[in-house]
Amino acid sequence: MIIPKIIKREYKSGFKAEVILKPHFYQRFFGIIIDFGSSDPQKVAGSAHFLEHKLFAKKDGDISHKFEEIGADANAFTSFNETMFYCSGIDHTPKMIDLLFELVGQPYFTKQNIAKEAPIITQELAMYKNDPIWGLNNAIMTEMFGHSNLGVEVVGTEKSIASVNKSNLTDAYSKNYVPAKMQFIACGDFSDNQVKTILRQVGKLQEKYFQAAKAELDQKEAPVGEMKDIVLPVKGNSRAFGIGIRFENFKKVLSSFDLTQILLEIMLESKLSVMGTWFEEMRDKQILTNPLQISVNYTRQGDFTTIFGVSQQADKAIQEIKRELTKPVAKNSEEYHFLKKNFALQKEEWLARTVRTMNDLSSLAIEMIEENLDHENLDLNLRKLQVMGFDEFNQLCKQLMKDSTICSAYLDPDRE
Image 1: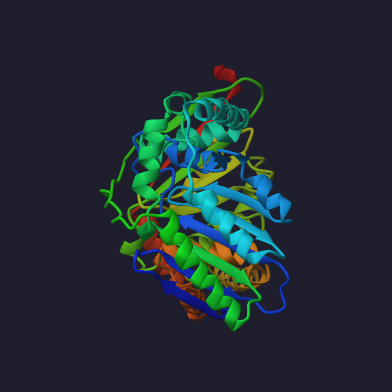
Image 2: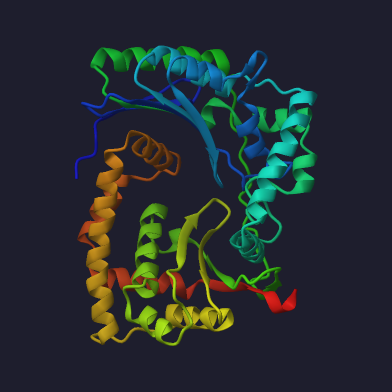
């Protein structure tokens, strides 16, 4: 697989920029990522997400309209350890970059517009709460990480959203939207001269909008919840369940968070997917009928997996999954050979997925800038995955599971 050519620049302020060259693409993508997300230290939970919303508000209205006037789209997202603002379009490259820096670098917080935004975000939270899986996820995250920012929904709580004001929002912005915690990315078909022009423009804009200040070193917290198995009463007939697996530390096993994440996803899919013998057994016992939703995450505050499903026998489904994930696999057994064959197939799927990402500008740009933020190397990790044998993979997964702890939750309509 060929990684596209990338030109990088770091300015005196600590602000970083890179341009990914993708010949023959008409679309152009630009983004700014901030090394600050929902689970990072902040006085009011949900401030990172509130900032994402509120930075679109300017004195003369929503800046999104200015992007639309030049035929460009703009958007943003907040995750556990990052916030990203981005735009894409075909023409008006200099204007898009100007607007992107204005979006991120020119806050306009007032008592009135903050008060107007709070009910909108509260409504967003209410929408999430209507989904039974949200309640399970919230309960599991709390069991794994307590009432820390990682254990709380990205948008915050009703109480925290209501307590956001101009003062604490400005404080969160000034502490985290500093050059040393920010990176710019451009992706598209650019000539050498265009690359130089973009990097020169970025250099001027980052000086204009962001004061050169040292990023405050946040103390690394490792919040710990009670890791209990709980039952949640629910209205209706939902029989959803969830499992949380908290890992001691990805880097105790591998030097790369990203590669560890990939290996765990392959292992979990191999053991629990509808293609395996275990799922066939669960189907025969009428414990499971639909595929499980599996997600592996790493953050500064903790590494974890969540697994969700639906079952009329949720308590039994949870016990069967725990048993499957913790039992040893005998070498040369039927299961061993299935997992070995599936590992080879899953590796090919990961490579194919990466190739598809390379052909989507926005996905590629976001993937590459996130890799930079986490000090990961996509090309190196994929090459390591390509040459990794099943026995090494199996041993690494055993080590990861050995130091893990598991909690669970399920919905029970009979306890309403």
